[in-house]
Length: 135
Image 1 (spheres, rainbow, N blue to C red):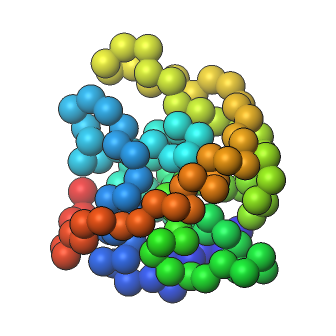
Image 2: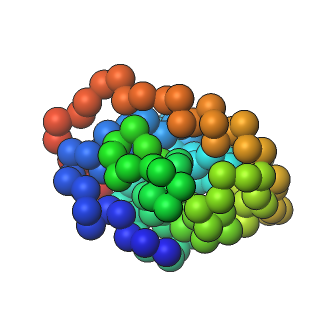
């Protein structure tokens, strides 16, 4: 898996994080949800941990994509590994389920349809956060 975060600036990484779906609940500053709904945590970039995440490309470089903010998404490391740069339907390794306000469960794999990737590729960063906060 390529480590794109090393090729991006901290403000660019922050823009990608800010453009990711909020996790819900009281911890929206710390947690987000990737395209499969898996929870990721801001301080766990490039960590293979429960809430670890990586930056993945919506359209991979070998399929004509570019390394730019609007082609990047924050993705749980297990899901990025499962996706492996495909533009086709793929099976996510984990999906985040919230059963109560404080309990998160990673239960089952889920199928991700191609149109979800296509929808995500239409997202643009609307607001820039100038400071990369360390949590």
